[in-house]
Length: 103
Figure: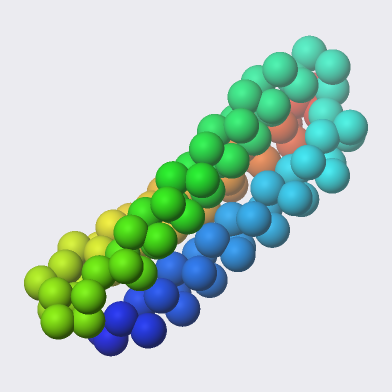
C-alpha cells in the first residue's frame, strides 16, 4: 500500500468514527435515564479513540517517503485492527442500549 492510499484509508476510518460519535451524541436524549451514565462513558471512550487515531495518523503522515516501506505493513495492520475493534464495540453499545430501552 502506498503512503497516500494508507492516508486516505485511515482518514476514511476517522471520518466514519466521527459520524458514529455524532450519531450517538444526537441519540443520547433517547437513552433511558438509568443507562445514560454508561452511554456517555462509552461515548467518551470512542472520542478518546478518535483522538488517538488522529494523532497516530499525523505521526504516520510525517514519516518520510523513503522510510514508508519499513512501517507501511504495521501501520496498515494497526488501522485495520482498530477499525474492526471500534465498529464491533459500537455495534455492541447500540445493541445493549436498544435492549435497555425496550426492557
